[in-house]
Length: 98
Image (cartoon, rainbow, N blue to C red; front, side, top):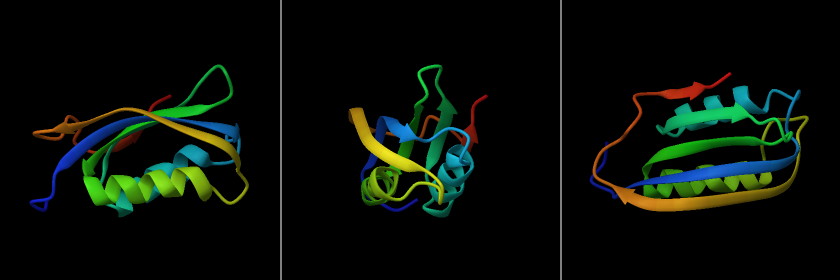
């Protein structure tokens, strides 16, 4: 981990994001960026989760969640909340929660 500030942020993604491998691609992208956290489907048809890691990598992942997603997804809106600086990571990996 770099000396860069660690941050934590929660997210919820709206649109066609279930049944299109969105969680799998989110997990792969998060791991590629060296982030930890989780992702899960909601009963409301959205995908939600939490990201933690160096600030610049979290920002990059937020852009990916807003504009890229999985190949067959259609993202209509991405909401981020409870962003905060953290002293250490609260997760050990990036997991899909079922």
